Image (cartoon, rainbow, N blue to C red):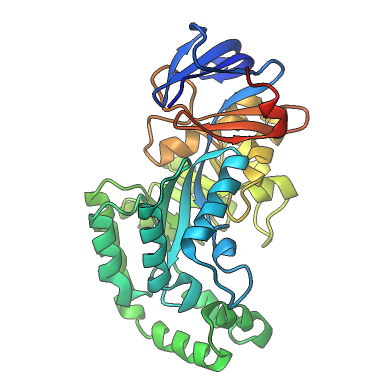
Length: 377
């Protein structure tokens, strides 16, 4: 791994912006304003920012299944996903892999394929597993517990989409989304969902076992789509200190009052609204209620959201939403900031164009644009 020196850029340090030379060696940030070594990158006029940490992203599903019933090999899909991540400045990605009772894209079989492909590949981006545990998927409980115990899971989130799926199946048009994703006829899928719903009396015990397994491995735990404060409190009692996509502002504010991280989607910021009519992430971020932004379903949104919020919030607080804060929530103390000794996750950004010229992940050059290549010395 060759040393890299980034010269003359506006480096975002924990104490603020500073024009400096940044030296990278052996995968770490070796020095600020040290002697130039190895490959030299002229960053004059550019922002030098900590790499983006995405703790909730499921856009990789579109690489596996770009159309209902059209699947591609998982290793190929992950290679394309990694290229997208690095081109968008994401140096750590928690893939939100749903372990559901649904056949097809979110099935236990796909779960195994994804974990095997991640373990078997050599990646520049640090790609991790965010287990989205579907509460009614009790048939796969042992699978989840075994993979948590084996260290193949890096974040656990509690999901419960079964009631909403059942409601939507009453509408043939809305229901077709789920049946086509599962590769089933609508009537057969509806019958399966109704059988699964009969497991309701055993769901809470399953949640308790998953939470206990995660706590024993000291894995961060999140709750997802909390509808009420009482629901959020119940998950906090299980150890969930991350509140993902709370459904109301009251829930988000209650989570923050308890010191929990509150995660919302970067697409919400970029588009100016939620795609399903929930609260404005930008407004809640400016108010300090939303503390972490994720890619949710669109990787390019994280860079754009962080830079867009730098206007009203300032660069350091805004960029923390996509770097330092998600790293802290995920208990990754070696990244999310630029400081000597930390993992060398760094991106070079043209501030006016809001465009990435280079991404360095773990000290390795993972992405370089044509403009970035012209700056190599």
